[in-house]
Amino acid sequence: NNFVRANGLSESEISSFWSKITLTELEDDVIEALRIIIPDIERVAVLADTSAIRDNYSVIAKIRGTDSRIPLRSLGDGISRIFGIILALVNSKNGILLVDEIENGLHYTVQLELWRLILKIAGRLNVQVFSTTHNWDCIEAFQQASMENQQEQGMLIRLDNRNGAVVPTLYDERRLNIATREQLEVR
Image (cartoon, rainbow, N blue to C red):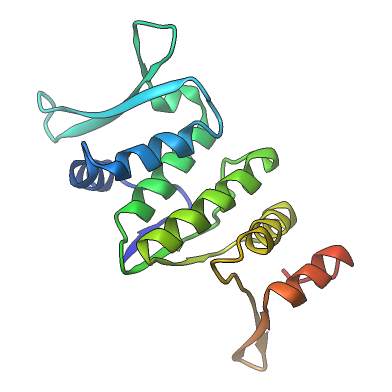
């Protein structure tokens, strides 16, 4: 079971997760995810700088048409966010992935593709994904991706505090489709 905080993975988590998937097909899933934002990414590596007092890690990317190695974080918050989410996802096989504020750093235009990929990978690797959001665009993207993916079941759970008790309201794909179409408040 893995957890991606709202501010992303730590350097040690990135290093550990990457070392577990290096040179496997799971590495290809991470590259596919990064291509949602930058289609010309060819490869990614996680490098350790052991000359520091504590180990520092940096993620670098190889982009088609360039010979230089580019730090992933210099390509924007969105690509770093996607990297962390998918890296944690592929390391959660037969388990659970928790993602806090999944939309952080992501432009609304990439959220549908990200949800499509999350559902595809989660289904293939048998991962149950729980994520939090207050973002309407993210909810709409999730709804659309879950309606398109007939293989996997998606559900939105709204949590309310009623007299000190947490009360869930469940929206299966059908109810979520109606809620987003009618723009009913589900957040």
